[in-house]
Image (cartoon, rainbow, N blue to C red; front, side, top):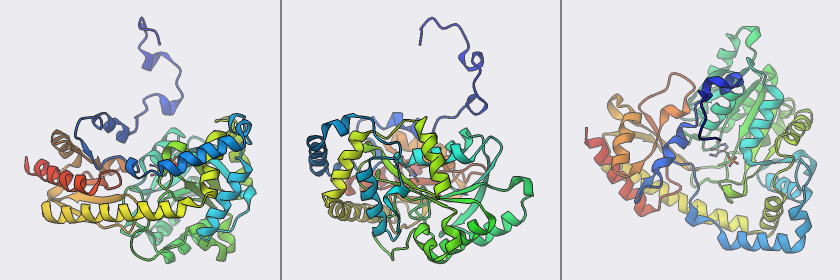
Length: 410
Ligand code: PMP
């Protein structure tokens, strides 16, 4: 970039349509405040840095390098290091999904998995469905793919499948959706989990109406209360026609560490083949050094214990947040209690605008994400997302006290 640039860069270059005036991630825009001394953040979807298994992962990294430095340093197969694919297939068996090593595509985070899928399915103008509210980077990916985005209604139990069926019935044939994106377990941003009956109904509907059901599942193992519900992909084993319509995206970001950038995708063979071709031009392969380290980490058997540790911590932090909200802002904020994951979805009373209030919150050195970031359209301006993953219990307590001050300083 030259400092003597004379062009009005936004107009000068022949950008592709979705990039003419792209909006950066609204959440990342908030990040500039994160570095402020003493800031308590309920904003990011970051796992807690004090909960990383630093020693265990460090040992795995070292062991991987010692065992085969050349494998760590060389390019690898586009679909992933076979030994890691095998470990991930075993991990999926633990989630009730039977798959073969060859079915697993290792991706550079699950975000890449969704991006690869969009490249194989969505041309500009194609229709895609997404739950609303939804993970903001999934919305952004659909926008940049030029999709015609239709939103699907959710309630406290995720997608309302009957409403979806009625919505599909009313669509003209030309707007037949190609896919539906959902986070059915401990959703980002709502924390909601779809019950089994809805999952089965949704899987059947995908097969019947022939759209690809994208099950994004980075949080599923972070359950701290209630009864486990299998992934939609696991339930589809008993609905033969449905398995051909589900793409499952997994991630180690929330259960091991996002810095390793390891995710995976399980897709029907014809889709998987195309995702691998797309990956060839995206990054050739996910960093073999990271794959080898993660493989050693998974095979060391430490994940189960680590999961126990983080789930316990998240349970306590979530309880601390809910208690503090009940005690300090009982009339100002209403919220839903999640059974796992990292997020509490809330709403300011009296129709107050959460994007306005966040400015006062930042003045008090506390942050959250205004809910509007998670809507494609018709945003609920009073909604907000609070993450309890990163702050300690003491910080959660102090953070809500500050939030109370911000809300009371009209
Ligand atoms: N899906 C959802 C629902 C997420 O919340 C996130 C991370 N915030 C991702 C995908 C991206 O995960 P990864 O780090 O594996 O790319």
